[in-house]
Length: 318
Image (cartoon, rainbow, N blue to C red; front, side):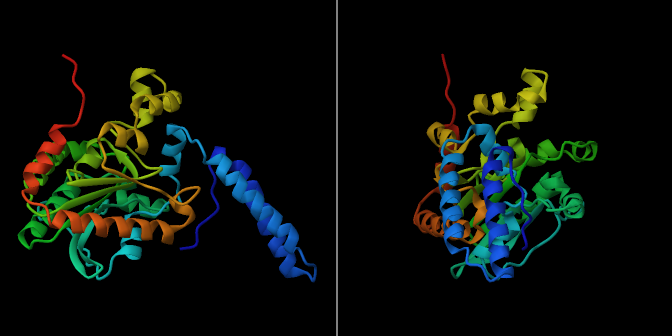
């Protein structure tokens, strides 16, 4: 896919240097002049600037990176990591929800069942995918696929990337909260291994509805939270402009989540974020999925361990 240039506010110094490099390379091609030394000097400065810009990102800056429009989505990772993917549609009750994609595939020759949350890259795609916000039929489709996997002894891999479940009137009328609650209950009882990976946004129950897993991974610049920073700011400060304060208070970034025991593993991203090197990020995910899948396939009594894992989360003061 041809990715358009896009930078976040804190990335502007880097974007300026990259534009200089592009212009210099173009000038070198269009003329007989040799700009090799100048090109090398700018490339070196770009690498130095990358290390400075991304050395100590705030939780809010990581949230912004998790939403980067060039970041790989579920179907992108499926294309890079898996083979023989066959997408299945519909919940057999209402309709198909394009915000949830899934079906059987192969990972290094092993048959698995994939369930992913999918966003769009332009207006038409986002309308089709509902901006990555699943309706109740999406969660029911996901559960249908997971029950199928359980029946045929296929490990389940869920790919999480959603701002949250769709909060519209239609979703409420069709019982979106009940659909998520049923997924939580049923996923706790599934006998096959379940791996979950948060690749971008992990918003509230919308993410948790496909995240009751034996091993939860999260990318370095992804987030996983009970509410979005903007939603939290609107409630606590009565102003969404305080989103950066909310992101800090929510402890939603990957390293904090690992320390709190909410996730089990943080995967390093290429310098600057997963959107800068899709292939490298995909290779990292593939290697960790294979490692954890091998481990879980040897484990006994997965439902009991999964239940205990989630019951142990949280801190309580007497």
